[in-house]
Amino acid sequence: CSNSNPTGPIDTTLCDFETVESVNDELFANLHELVAMPFFKFFQVDLYRECPFWSDDGSCSSPSCAITSVDESQIPERWRAKSLSKLEGSKIEEVRFRKVLPLQVANPAQRHELPGCYYRDSDFCFLDDNTDGDYYDLTLIPERYTGYAGPDTARIWRSIYEENCFGLSEVNVISGPTPGISVPDELPDAFKTEDNDEDDGQCLEKRVYYKVISGLHASISTHICQEYLNQTTGEWYPNLQCFINRVASHPERLQYIYFNTVLLLRAISRVGPYLQAFDYCSTGGHEDDAETLAKLSNVISIAQRAGQFDETLLFRGENAVLKEEFKEHFRNVTRIMDCVGCDKCRLWGKIQTTGIATALKILFELDEKALDPETNHNLLQRSEVVALINTLHRFSESLAAVDTFRKMWRATSVEE
Ligand code: FAD
Image 1: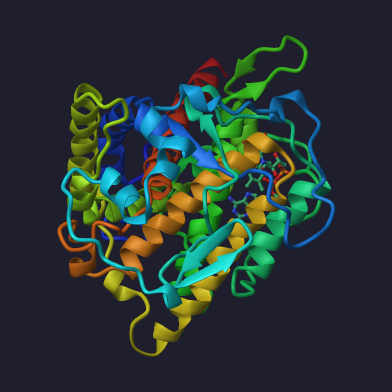
Image 2: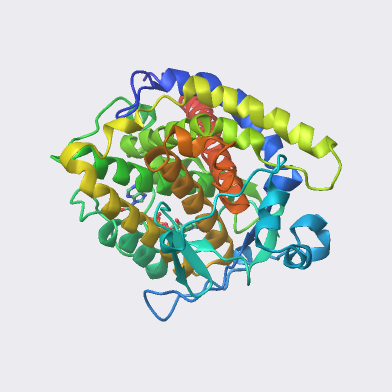
């Protein structure tokens, strides 16, 4: 029974498992500190928009689902609504950037308004217009087991896969909870990630889409299993059986966690110069700013090494028409988050779908000129930058958890 770590190329990327494994400790350590900095830990979002797809959202009454927003007085003054409302239009943009540059005026035709939110033609998600949103301190709201399950979650995942995945046939989403957990006799396959990715006649774009969604689902499941609640003792613990059942016994799900990590790293590598020009100063002093920038630079440098993905292979030739479909589907996924009935799950669902959507925009919509901070400093909103980095942190933490589960499995095997 060999529990060797995964090896070989990660399908549809230019990267291999070994490279991701070799950088993850360093990546996770830097991200973990970065997301605790004021700029990255406060996220503003309207969590209480109506679900646009069905009327009852199956609200979860579990105390583990409840979250508390932070009072605006705890937020650095420059981000508070009052301060921002004192500034007119273009001045808000100036606050966001270290260098005051001539503003690029967005073409209004590219912006589509909906109640409380909007999207631009290049966006893969709906963005809040930040009029009704509360601030949350993400360091106080760990993504972990909440008990949110049953027909409501099955409906959400089903609608994400079936209604928004170009009708992919390989998806087998059942309603109701996963049947009883059982440890397969032979586990090693569960920890292998060799390429068993079936092409299934699907074009590259559709396969990438499915990997993104399934990888996100697998990462969420990994966090649930990593911090599982013992209902009797009230203790949180890593639940190996849960991980085997939900992720490891489906090797492709594990692969897609790596895939998403590479995708996000590639996006961060591309947008590196822009991120380095962003204004991270939260208190008015320079220490925060410098510390945040230093950690971010480390993350960007890792991203340049491991973010090996060729985005130019997608949406080429006759497949170019698929981009709008892809975008529309992913925007819908971000709206489905308004239907998630557990506040904590909805918060992390919104952050991660926004983070992935931001990465997709960086990869598939923006050329080198658009990414230039000198000419296009109006490129990303603060919420997109915060979501992008926090989402990479979620995936990197999942990979760290996979390592813990591998060790647990080895220990179990030795005992036997
Ligand atoms: P589910 O995870 O609900 O999966 C449903 C079905 O989808 C499975 O039976 C399987 O057939 C298929 N499937 C499962 N994983 C994959 C995959 N990776 N790729 C392809 N198909 C797959 N719960 C928490 O406790 N904490 C959270 O923070 C949390 N956040 C959530 C965020 C969102 C956006 C959503 C929609 C749900 C969240 N949940 C959370 C609920 C959680 O994801 C599960 O739905 C719940 O634990 C019930 O799990 P389940 O075993 O029924 O299978």
